[in-house]
Length: 217
Image (cartoon, rainbow, N blue to C red; front, top):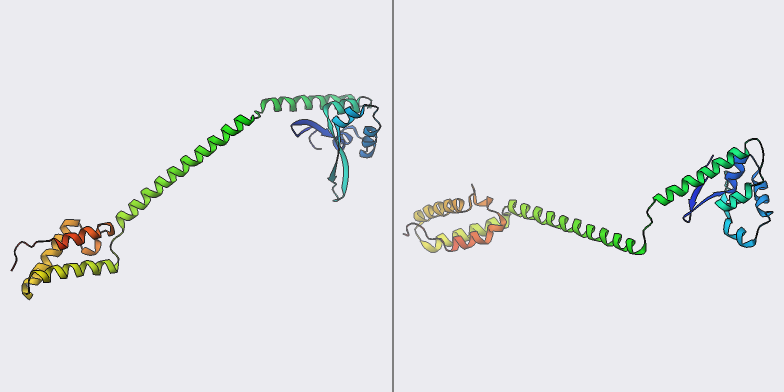
């Protein structure tokens, strides 16, 4: 059995199928009872709504959506061994559902706008935190990246150009190469010029170009 009552368009309602099942009647007879109610057109139109549904065999059928007031009028004349028990059960279900609805906060237009603004701000804050973490990550990666092959060759050419500009003595050049490489490693805290960070590339070039050996031949 389906729930006796449910919420549709913010109203607590039942339907003719459920009424038929609960009171042990054929659905066509319940629909007939609704059509034959001796009530005003205004009451009928406000409390009974005819809609289509798909039955278990996939066929399109009709049923009525019934308000609490419409239900009360419809079953007023229903009798039988368990009719009163079913009426009480329905009344309890309607009351219970009304209590649930009253306990559900329905946001006003202003509250909805405020909630939307709050969610927008939260999204912006999350994006800002993500951007900050991404920037931090990029900075950490930048700190770790060393010279690629082309940059290593550029640095080596700068070393060679500097040494060759200082002396024409082949033996002395060897000592200058050793001295300059040693000072580069000390200056940038690396075990090889290949380990210099890419972010320090231009600083290393400037250092080489301005390097002065301890003793010039």
